[in-house]
Length: 288
Image 1 (cartoon, rainbow, N blue to C red):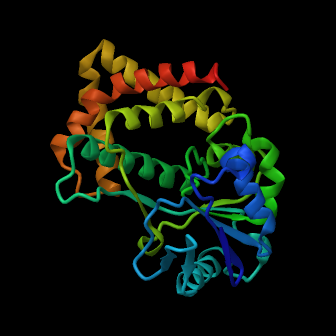
Image 2: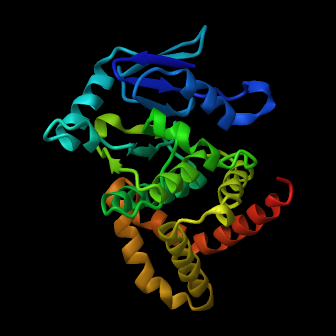
């Protein structure tokens, strides 16, 4: 479903829609192609957006905006990126923030670990993009110039069932397009953690399975550094004394509610479930 407003079209590929059996990337292409605005705002259908910004029609599953949130985005773009009013200065890809939050008053241990990990991922996403070395982005909350997205569609690896966002990021970086960040609480979307270990590992293996297709030097260097540090931690646990303070700071910069004990437990467990997810993800490639 998509709903046009002003110069931005909201694009929400719905889960469970067959879309000719060709998957999410085909659905995205169909929806983005049908839009007529310069920009499309890509959103997953399971995210929660700022209160009063959008409403969901239960009968049609259409996400509607009162227009204020889009006006706010456009004003922010004009203020932050177009100081002289030149359209050519506007970003081709705009990364918007995400925050993981449980729907339970007392999150489970698994949920707390994911919330801490996601905070670190989000802070790395924002910081790397602000430095002009973007290594992560999420299609759950992303604004992109429609024409540029369509030009990049062949680079999205339709043979792989996920990764439209990361492959899009790689394509934009390779083509020298402008990537920016709109790190503003009013545009933060909420994502939910996985509620079972089974779904958690399936998600992580799906993420890890895309890694062999990455070609961007910044992404490859970041991935290699993360892998190396975690292998070193398994070999020599004392590495934790250097690694943990840095990563705890990264987590707390994005989500101050994460407790020290949760972050420490994540740090102890992460190398093992990262390797398990990586091996499982590589095994999945054989079925693609």
